[in-house]
Image (cartoon, rainbow, N blue to C red):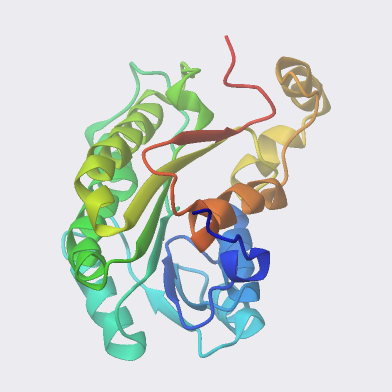
Length: 257
């Protein structure tokens, strides 16, 4: 017997609670707003830009809230979970987007920069999965999306710890996928390429660099934050119920050798 596919229900997230880290700007902002447009109530995590985060929460509506935490701190994940569940209830959708990046030669990276990238990009995301997934298992429904990078496949000589942390995050997604799958919980990795964000604004403002990067990308254009939204909605909704453990590149082909 074939189940009937209901397209409207497939992307309807009404009544779902989502937590998006690093959601005050860039890719996180775009994904948070898209989840809200599908009906979810969203906890908008941020670290410094309070006004921007509040603007995102107000734009989403549905009782969405902001939650501040510096993910390099040891107790950040626990604090986020307590704050969000206390105000909104258990998290149904977890999007792990927050990251930090330092452009340095691998011989110039210092211990502080190394630790911050590992703690924010990897450790805190792992801890949030540890803390949030048990309730998803209990409810037999959950969506977890880690946000990696094209650098998992195409290493950059000036961002070794960053790329390594993103590769580690992709491994976390594959590892948890087998453990969570029997319980109706999916976890996948979305790996963006070069996207027009605040982080990339300086280098993309250089016409020579912009032209060089576009020529490097097979599709010959820089990505925009909305390019990540379709993939994120698929992997965070009912539509992606039979997809887990995948590494989905949204990179215009930049992941190709």
